[in-house]
Length: 104
Image 1: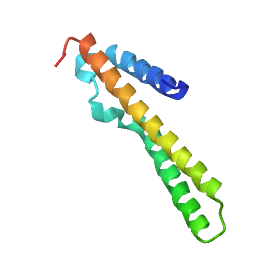
Image 2: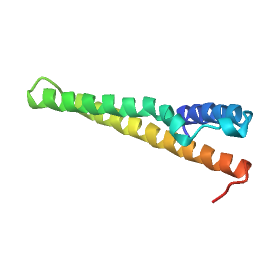
Image 3: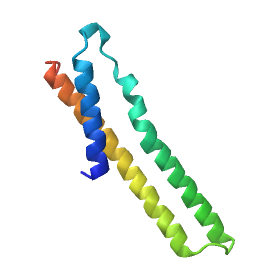
């Protein structure tokens, strides 16, 4: 797990622990945690735009191949971070269900 994914996981664990201390009627649904994925999704969208622009610059003879390859690398890194965030979230949800005795 990368350092960024570990930090996101720790932040998510802290959120879950804070919610566990609330009465059961106040427990949020999983939909309330959708904001956790906003940042990785935005990074992927920005990286996709960088790839598009680099490809256009290369096609118009203004850009170099290296610029396009670096943009593709950044897109891959952003997608990987998003997958790691989703996996960390799913793991935290599973741990929460196990902690409260609601395994499926």
